[in-house]
Length: 212
Image 1 (tube, rainbow, N blue to C red):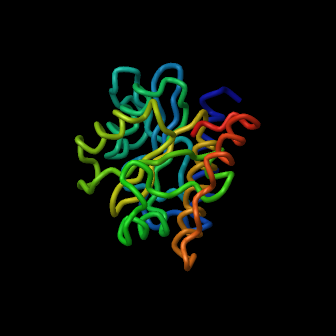
Image 2 (image 1 turned 90 degrees about the vertical axis):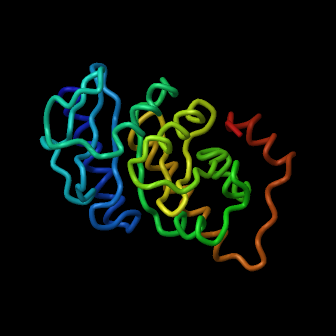
């Protein structure tokens, strides 16, 4: 199996897993992966639970659609992330319930939507900024994400949900799932938990190389 074929299968496997577990519904969400000669991205209005490897859109290094179904309308968002974060090889965007609910209830801070309340949040996710509401596919929202992509692993769109990038599609999905679980814990806690101490976060940096 070629590397591109393997990545096509990975996108479909991750999409089905996210869909089956309720991280996305209907035709919401999109996934992309960097190739040596461009990108793969899920088609516009595709259901992540029913992706066909052969129908994933392929875009060349210049941004031209070259094969497969029509690319997602968020193509510019994904391309901006890859340009700004060269080490990233996978991007996942969903409309995950608890993260959307967090934006409706009010995030902790606009530069860090959740306080650091669990060690795996610190280790696997890091700081996540809020991107103010704009319509899906808006070019300005894509530019705002690209501007921070080198410093963080993801961002949260107000009323729309998270976008996360990592060294592979699977790793991006894992970070997104950790972020969604943290939002669920935060929203269900009463009273709200205190953040981890500065000393605890420094220990995670020293022992595990946490980027926080």
